[in-house]
Each structure stands twice: as structure tokens, then as C-alpha cells.
Image (cartoon, rainbow, N blue to C red):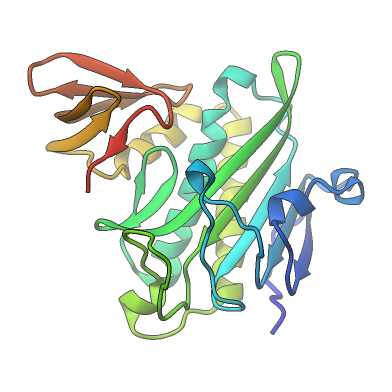
Length: 253
């Protein structure tokens, strides 16, 4: 059944039965030229959905939420683009909490986790104009009503597996769009500190000593901070501080 979410004012919506990638579709000239501030494109099935680190995102047709958002955050400098990652991650996390009551956290930089299992992954692409961001396209895969995972992904989970029942996909997508709209407006009005605080409060492994691995091997460390540019700062068990960009460190599960 095609999705028909209720969306905030200023959103253009496209739904496809199947596509290669929602992020690729959002780059079509007709959609890039839309006058609305936001374009939301969803699909029931992706044949080439992308996960992080070049992996494939497994999703049964019609069971999950596979979508992307196109926006033009020209007010934001390129060196502050990570705030958009925080906005998208918080929009999903807060909507899942609201609709299902499932408590979720954000695994740096922007995966959505329930305990130690991955519920949602997302990617962001930015086009720059000088020092400013011209266009941002997000791509989100959220496991909603999938009852079984067949790939060798180590820790996937869906809302169906957690709750034991299906979740209204259109309602959930609607709430994600509304939360994204509100958080984006907050960012545009200069409330980036509030957004960052909310992001930090939701972080996976926010407290305590945990195992990580980098190019030198495994180590134990505590979370310290995430910089405005998205760098993860850890303090290892010998007291030394370590700073990492995405893909430079791995969470040992």
C-alpha cells in the first residue's frame, strides 16, 4: 500500500514502489529544482540501498521505511555540517520514541540503536557553495515491520521484533518529518547548542568504559565529546585523549 503521510507545510512528497536508491532519485533535476524547502522521497523497496562503509542495506519490500530528504541549508557553513546529521538522527529517534515507546539511542555518528542492536542507518551528502552548504540529501533505512533478517549483518533489529506487532509506517514517517522540520528550524534560528545537547544525551555508550578498535588495535575508553565537525573524542584507560573521524574507530560489540 502506498504511503500517505501527513507532512508539515512546505514539503513535497514522492513515493515509489521500487527504486535503486532514494538518495540517487533525489538528485533527479526535476526534484532538485522543486520550489519547496523540503522534498521527501520514500520507496517500498530499494535494489541498491547503501549502508555505511559501502555495505548493502537489507530490507524486505513494503516492510520498512526507506526514504531520503532533500533540503537547502544555505545558512549553515560547511564546517558545521555535522549538525544536520544530528538533526536527522534526532528526528528518527524522537519519532520512534513518540510513536512506539521504544527507547532508542544514537550510535556515533548517526546509527539508531536499541541496546546493542541496530534499528536504523543513515547517510548524508552535502553539496557546497564556497564556505556554505548549498544542498543536503539524507538517506535513511529504518527497520519497521521486518520479521526476519537473512544477511550476515551482525546485529540488526526491527520494531516488529521488539514490539511483537506491526507499526504504522505512514504515521512513523509523518512524525519523523515533523521532528526534522522542527529541529531544522531550531538549527536555522541558532539553537545549535540545544540540538547538540540533545544529541549528546542520546549517545550510545555515553557512560562508562567500553571497548573500541582503531588501526593500532583494541583499547578501552570513555566517551568525552563530539565536536561540531563530528569528531569523536575518547579518553582511554591510561588517561590519554584520542580523537577520531568517521571510519577511523570501531565500536567493539
